[in-house]
Image 1 (cartoon, one colour):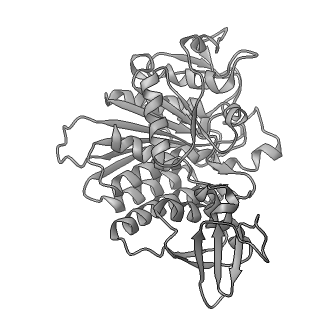
Image 2 (tube, helix red, strand yellow):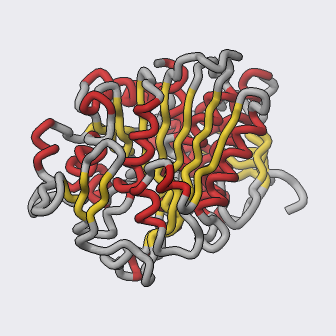
Image 3 (cartoon, one colour):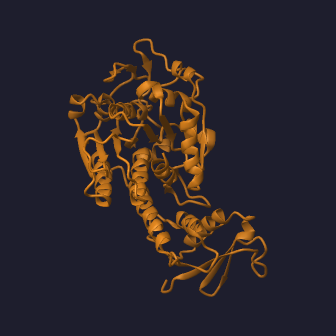
Amino acid sequence: MTKAMRVHLVEGTAGEPWGEAALLSFNGSEAHIHIGAAKGAALVAAQRAARRLDGMGINEVILSGEGWDIESRWAFWGGYFNPRINNKIHWGSEDAGELKELAARENAACWVREITNGTPDDVSPRVLAESAAEMLQKLAPSVVNYRIVAGDDLLRDGFVGIHNVGRGSVREPVMLQLDYNPTGNADAEVDICLVGKGITFDSGGYSIKPSSNMATMKSDMGGAAMVTGGLALAIARGLEKRVKLYLCCAENLVSGHAFKLGDIIEYKNGVTVEVLNTDAEGRLVLADGLLAAGEDKPRFVLDAATLTGAAKMAVGRDFNSVFSFEDEMAQKVLNAAAQENEKAWRLPLEPFHLEQTPSNFADISNIGADGSPGASTAAAFLARFVSEGGRNWVHIDLSGSYQPSANDLWAAGAKGHGLRTIARFLLDN
């Protein structure tokens, strides 16, 4: 198109000839989004209309008029994003603070969506780690330092989970260890640790997935992407706390070198784990990241992962799932999500869930006993690798972070839903 379409967000219904139920009406090169047709849900209306405009092939818009605020503009961006086409939005605002915030959100969300949507051939474990480090270092070059532990060096440092999961691939597994320290004091205490699951492709290993379930498994590094994006947004907003980031990156493939059912992994804290399902690999790599985080003695630990299908079954793809033994910790994340207009829902985690991963040959196994709740037992597994039995720790199962096919709100692929929650958690706690 040669001219950007002006898009107005207006109250009331469209009327004739469009009809009172119409979400959109048009007048030449102008479009009107009718909030009344969405029964007052302005953010949903903006995002749904953006999807429709994208579907019409309108690839450049100006958000015009008095009806827009920062949240409705951002909702429109969420729906207008197309992984195949570089749609362009002119925000239609002259407020410098608002434009700065929108640019920060767009930078973080674009990185999350694009790295997650990247092909598994392009996004290897090392590429994921390096891309995350480079993006964060570009934001704050003088206060970001990192190292990448790769291949057999993981064993040297005691990170046996990442190594075992990743040894079936010719592309080495890695852990990114990144330190954001704006204090200027190398001995400053670490305030918060972030840990992310970075499985860049998950075949299921010897517990192999059917093709229909494997097709979207390039997105199994969504946790690593999300904690990175959350930290990026918090930095852009002026984060002044020391935060360490651990990304646990590997490919879970089948080969003569791959780990097998019946293998026993002994972690550096002495916990032994019997592998009873190689498709429950995310918790095996996250255990290393949580152990590393515990060594920093932070005030809080937050991990994020596309960990279980059970969480999606429980809350669908519109909410992320939150787990903690402590009401206060869970509420911190729920509050952050609410403030940022993202959806999160707490699912159960109780001490008795720790007993639901029994093993005949090790301390625990990596899956729950028959009939046990998969999302809760996965969270309980992680808790065994958190200092003080899971105190000051919260786990986010990213149920709502990826859309297998387009719907009326999102294009197919990564959504970035969760990065604002994590940024707010970092800034407010």
